[in-house]
Each structure stands twice: as C-alpha cells, then as structure tokens.
Image (cartoon, rainbow, N blue to C red; front, side, top):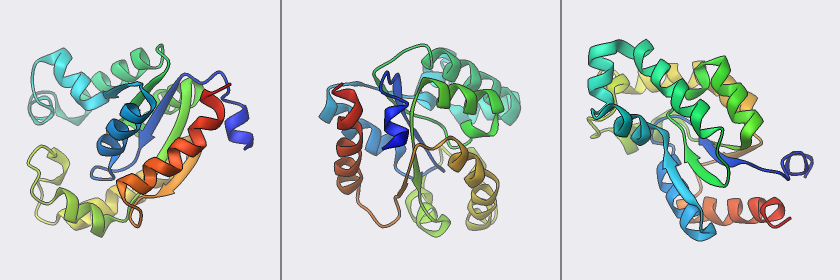
Length: 181
C-alpha cells in the first residue's frame, strides 16, 4: 500500500510492457469501467503525424520514432485522470521513465516472450518483429526492457497467466484505493 499512498494525488495510470502484453486491451477495459479517457500513445503518435508507426520507422528510423514518442509522453504527463497504454519501447528513454514515474501509477504487464509471439504473430503493424526469428527478437527485447519496466512499475502483473478480465478486476481493486480519496 506504500506505493498507492505516494500517488494519492494521482495523475494518470500508465500501462507498460512488451508488444502484445495486452496494454491496449486492458487499458480500454479499465477506462470504460472507471469512466476515464483512454489514450494509446502509439495511436496518438499516428494521429499527430498522419502516418502509421511502420511508416515512421521506415522514414525516420527507430530513433526518429522514439523522439516523437518522448514528446507525446511528455505531453500526456501534463494531463491527469487518463488511462494510458504506452509503446513497448517507451521505457528505453530515461526522460520517459522519469515522466511516467512522476505523473502517475505505472502498471507493468509482464508476459513471457513465447506468449507474446502467439499474440503478435500475424500483426504486420509491429516493425521490430519483421525479422527472421521473431521469438528470439522478443526474448532479446524482454532482456533489454524488463529491468526498465520493473524500475518504473508501481505494480507488476503476471499477464501471461491472467485474462484481461482478471487483470481488470485486480487493477480496479488497486486503483479504487487511491482514486476515491
């Protein structure tokens, strides 16, 4: 409960985790249940640029995309009361990690790479997975990013074994504690 107490003037709820962890699905359900606005940072980037994320990767590379993502996260951190699904790599930049921690309650949906592969296998909208061995890529991303997800997380949920509805129930209970103050 210590984590909850330091966030009683909570800004947003951020969902972090690798691609396919369920951030958007859980975020939408949670926002609906709590009557809050849902924002997917990747969709926000697409809305601002007018192009898809694979197109941004193609034209500007991953670094160009990360710069745009950092701006969107900085802007979202100024708001409050929103449920925000972040891109899987948002935690790579130190300023993003600082913004997430300072402006809300961060939930890490921790899902093992083999489960992520099942969920993302046919999704062409994931530029980082358009490689010969997507499972190995997911394992590499997990090793690289897991420490950062853990660093920013106020709550870690094993999302590989729990359904979206199960995660929703758990989060509603956790969040109800401080959004009702």
